[in-house]
Image (cartoon, rainbow, N blue to C red; front, top):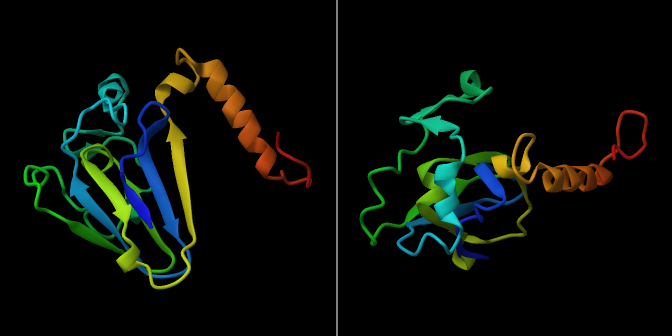
Length: 158
């Protein structure tokens, strides 16, 4: 199981992408009512948004989306809410905006029936990207990450 949390905002950017490969499960969401310094949520307002005025302003895959995303913006006022999002095998979940910053997410033990394999993709915050105040650290992280895959010639990309 995965305890309720928000992916830390000091290093991970606005979009969190999860690819559920094997077994079905549920992602449980509850409104977060804690302090903003717990997950470095106070830093979020300093970053350029992927979503503005309830619209995605940068999504190269918009034409491939068949359904409207869950709108969680007005639901986080109640502490009694638990939302369970089904994650069938081979499903893709993208969290951003309110679902990323206003809700803790978890995978509860009771929702796990088989072995789980998830690939999570995260982007760095603008602080660590080119032009950011810590871009040198971001460059080093990306260079290290390149050591984990091979390029088209069969050698490490890093």
